[in-house]
Length: 189
Image (cartoon, rainbow, N blue to C red; front, side):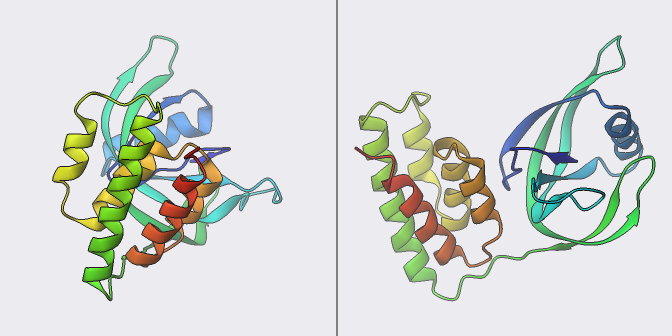
């Protein structure tokens, strides 16, 4: 599914309303099969069947409620970053080959240190007035995996879709955390 400003981040939930005929057909097919589908951000510089950026997210349909008018509301849970490959089907909806983008972590100590810096920055953002659920900072401190922490913080604090997309395209956990820290530092007064 190609959307103008939406990114499906691993481990995040994305609510969607499906109303276009091609996406309604895609949703029916997905539910009948493996309940998986991808979200790609639209590339405004392109037109036609490849009008999207080359990286996106694959997700699992966690919940789907159909309305009487044929539309559906669903919750999609991000599972993995993917790179889009060959277009294998165009009608009634696009199907592409995908390659899962496995994250790399060559220096776990560096990633852990960056995760701690990220937590400090999140605490500062919370102090500066970012509206957060009461227990969120406690939950963030309980996350021991730097990659998971980065994904959760991206979903929680980062509102600019183009920045989220840049993070989706980076496979190095440390590089992704450094980039996320730079993006968030711009939000701190």
